[in-house]
Structures are given as C-alpha cells and as structure tokens.
Length: 183
Image (cartoon, rainbow, N blue to C red; front, side):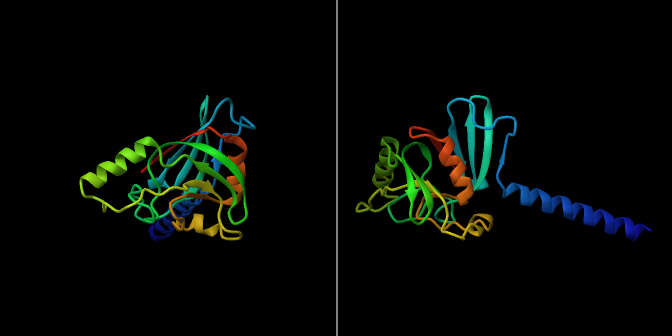
C-alpha cells in the first residue's frame, strides 16, 4: 500500500510540474477584456523569456519570447547578437517577408550611446567597435515556432515571438508604444 501511495504521489507531482512548464511556455492573457483598456506598454524580461503587455488596469498578457545571444547579457557592440536593455519605443510596424510581422525599436537611444561610450572609455569594448542598430520585435521563420518553445535564442539581437503571438501584439501595440527590456 505504501509503494502504491508513493507511486500515485509521484505521478501527481509529475503531472502538475509538466502542466506548469507547458503553461509557462504558452501565451496567457486576461479574459475579461477583448482588447487592452487604454494605452499599452511592453515589458520584456529576458531572464524569464517573456514579453508582457500592460494596459491601464495592469497586466494584460504574457507571450513566450526568445532573443539573440544565449548569454542574455546586455548588447555591447554591433554583431554580438545580444539584445539591448533599456527603454525604447516602437518606431515603425510592417509585414515582413521572413518573420511574419516586425515592429522596429528606436535602438540606439541617447542612453545606449552614453553607455556604449562609457564602456569604450573604460576599455570594456574596442575603440573601433560600432554600436549597431536594427533591433526589433518580430515573428519566427515560417513553421519554426518550436524555436520559441525550445528557448533557442537565434536572432541577431531582436526579440522573436511565435507568429500567432506576434499577430496579437502587432494589433494592440501602436507606433509609439513604450518597450522596456530588462535582464
């Protein structure tokens, strides 16, 4: 009887853990609104692989996301494949031939340039380094959404969502939307 209880308890724990992990990697949102209430802003948390949307009432939705370099460190120089950390805004939106839809961010900002120049002055990056540009939020390659589920950081520093999630964020986040990216 004891081993049977132990087996049942183990199966229950495994089932609950599996459900929690599967839920974490899927999109979630409030269901009492069909769309966000008021202006939205986006919080991207690299350490938890999430893009979160907030409206005037607070949290609205969370979507799984992946980034550039697997180190998840802050962008240092052009070509390091790291996703920058800071406060940005969506400056343009358009369909994209490879990645479904794309929302360009205003990287580099004055704050990024100051951080970059400070790192150069301290010798943390080469004097000849360039800061880079072209950071955006976009979908995945067609039929390659498993990259998001598998935590595969594949971009050159951008934020990538599953295409169906990108479609939703694209609809609710207008040009000008604030985007905060943190570790």
